[in-house]
Length: 109
Image (cartoon, rainbow, N blue to C red):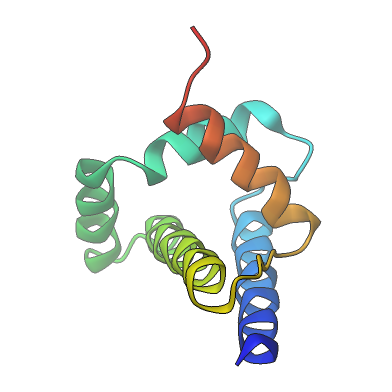
């Protein structure tokens, strides 16, 4: 069970990294990662990206898929912590993006 979650987290984080590359965003581009993290936490933005993707916008499709993968990765990590009593994590790219997500969700005042 735990091994499956590790494998799943690795696969998801690798796919997230490929989506970021497709969007032209590197793990060192903190401004772009912060913007993308903010967008991924906004349900209205998800709907906008889906509508654009359905209209044939490939970049919107990539962002829409990325947002879904982010949600999935967070669920895998949460399930691992609650069910397996272990924390799984993704690759370095995921860790950088996860920090951007956390900063957007819990901004310092």
